[in-house]
Image 1 (cartoon, rainbow, N blue to C red):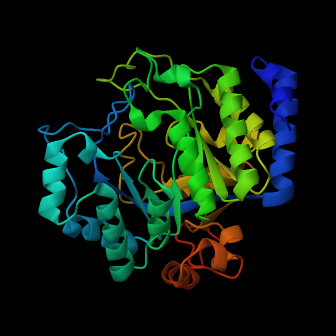
Image 2: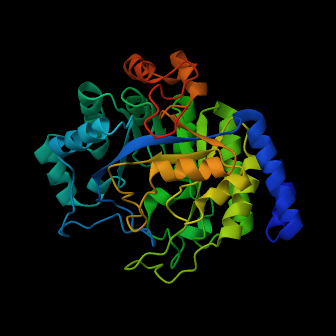
Length: 378
């Protein structure tokens, strides 16, 4: 469905909204069937230093603040090893963007670890995890060049970069992305394009409720569609709802309600190519099972060990609870790997030998996880 045909659906409600949901779920079911997937992961916040200062973020710390810095290799391996014991298959590396370009303290910290840049350290820690555990890294390292993405591809099964929104209006003074060089839409679009040129299986998505208009949401989703049509490498798209956090510039900003979230999800499902997985996080809304009514097929990464460090106030629901609510909606929860089956079937294009072999050991014939770690899995 084209973007132009969806611009007028901002206020659709009641029976029309039900029809929209029916179209979205029919499209999902025809390709994905009656399953909803998730990835069992550990969250490795490699550094909470960042050169950006988004108006809604509590993850980032400034040099000198308590807890600011980089995880050590020992800390990384400790988290990964404990996750492996709990049945995790994915190591999600998440971090601030290029802090060494802003802070001399960050450069000093990296030098003490033996590295010149944050991306060098990310790649080394991915190698550490692959060499010492069965976990497969997924890398959220922000904007990157094609050469950097090619290096990331050597040590990971996938990578991620939230587009958030393509509106340049949101980088203006008083807006959420003001003075955030890595949130300039063109830079994020270039990274997603470069990932396609490097054939890196990618996660991206939009963040709703940060001050964007409905038309800007549609334009953002259309940008993702356009990039995927050029390269075919967008394996999943997240629609994430803004949550206001104390101590931020947007602490009193209104959050999107459930109807807004459901409407956006249904539109995303109708706009996106059917092979792109549609994901919404289950920890940011109490009634998360309703997302299934709007056409999602994936819950994203869920951890039995580590918190959601981006939204620490929102605890993960137990995987068994997600499985129960999924079943109540007539669907079955299936554990996947960080690389989706479609891309596992094309290893010569999308994977390097080390990660392909590691993924092959974890995958069953259909490409999902061979060992389903949650209760009542089948």
